[in-house]
Length: 117
Image (tube, rainbow, N blue to C red; front, side, top):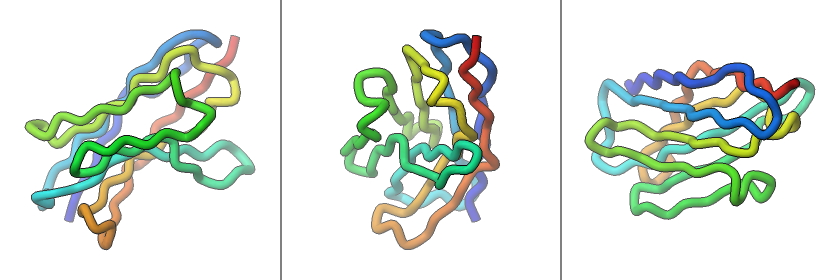
């Protein structure tokens, strides 16, 4: 089993920044992918950013240039630096973890990000 603990959500004004963290513990795969999804009220969960075991990075088009994903394998942790936040970024953000073949998936409990003046 893998446990994911997220932190860093909160309330921020438009144009502000937040940094999300997600630490994995338990039975860690030797090679794994990590990423972030989000779900706004009344909407489907969507992939925001992901970094593969090989370092390949993908972003949702609407966050490109504003969000940066990174990982620290020594700490089994993934980060999401979110800059120039917009009200439409408001959602619950979920950490996602999988083995490198994406056969096994684990989710964090979610952290609320609210962008509002």
